[in-house]
Figure (tube, rainbow, N blue to C red):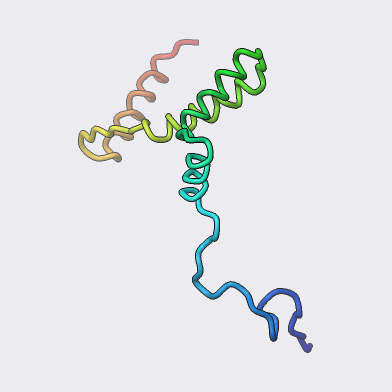
Length: 109
């Protein structure tokens, strides 16, 4: 069985393109800089203003979207998981299993 090389994708002869390893032309930092340069305000301030305007207009769907956006950002940067280790994980699981089995054996029908 013969396979033929696909002509889809890849480099095209006699055509220029982005050099290997080149970065994106649009960056998040660049976008934020342009917003600040044109509005003379920080993006966060604009976001809060838009959120407040949605509330004044009583646009519940848009308010919920702003809440989700803001809370996702806040929660992702503020959440911390504190782990307290007493013994090993295996020991903790064994104790929990033993306690559950003890409760099961005391069940009366």
